[in-house]
Length: 114
Image (cartoon, rainbow, N blue to C red; front, top):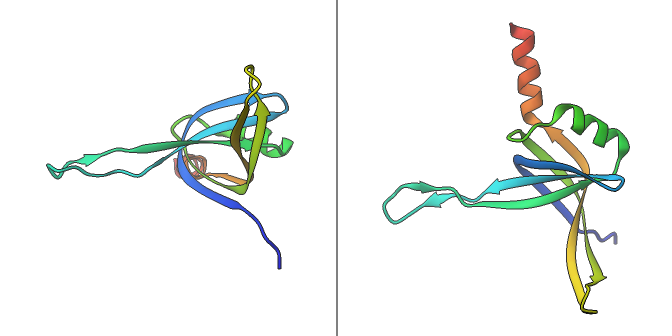
């Protein structure tokens, strides 16, 4: 039996930054709800997705903008490192294997219809 750890996020892009040979994209998934007064309150959760594939990185740099709605899917890996005090720190790498920009597609369709 094959085992795996996988993630999927649909949300809005925040920051896009190059880190070493990777591209990291922060994505907000909004878990909003109504408050006691019946008004909608936004409650975003930010996740940073790492793009390792050079072709996907190039495409994202040329086409993805903050505010775009994207779909990222890939594997999760727990990481650990030693901090400056000699203690162990833990984190999670969300390695995107699939990355699509829904807003880019909409902009392209709108440009064709003009």
